[in-house]
Length: 374
Image (cartoon, rainbow, N blue to C red):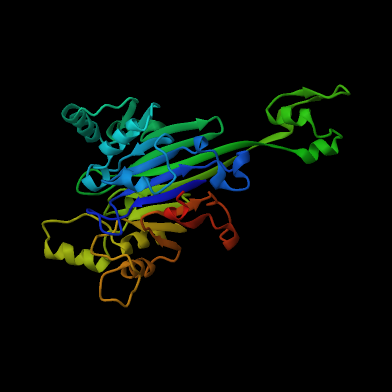
């Protein structure tokens, strides 16, 4: 299960309602005992999370959530434009002052390392924890199955894979595929009961992978009574990108696509026509919606909206607003569509392989993170 919290949804500059880009992704394990009744009760130490982009003010946004910088496992920066990375130095400094000591993985363009080195030199920025810096350029230069791949292990049963995909923008920009695998051993209790083996210590040992001997001398092999079940959840988060088709391979068997929709198609066309020498190289809601429809993506969240679009949703208003963005996408897309707002939360439960049925909805809107402030 992956829980998404949007910390910033504005493009370029913040507005009164929206901060610039940042997205938190919590990695929840629904099989832990404390999460069987309510995933929100899961021990915070077992809830690592990722930060995708870190625009200016991201650390301030985090104060309105329950997310802790101590459980932050990795930061992924899609590209070097300021609305996606200017908040990084401040966030790292705050993590240091809050007492973080564990290493932190940072996946980003090489220029981000240069930026941090300059800030350390000029501002005496001291970090008491190691930064495991992984340059995107180096990852993409690898050959074979490891090209563009990073593996993060929370524990033996909980693995996170991050794959990187080049996009099309004015600077090198990238999309991140986040795939969570959670494995568990399932004990065939019906078979044990049918064979007259009562519930007890032997059942637990078998489920742990141990071969056992019963009181009457029978040898039981764990492999004959235990099967492995793996839950897979995948989301794809794109940086700035004017060609959604760049993600054609990435979105196969994906539960959710998060993509920028900076403009409506009409506005984007006007901008490109007015100044042919400067293409902002962003997507319209129509362009992303058409891509999602063609690829059979069932769930789509649009974000990174131009400041010209106000946050209310009214298609009949003359003022540019979310209603126009929504209509632009819905004119070509028939799946489940959401327009992200700051602090909006979504739960992705990983059921892309299930039949298309309402009872199998695998992306759920949870509400506003600020509603749960303590």
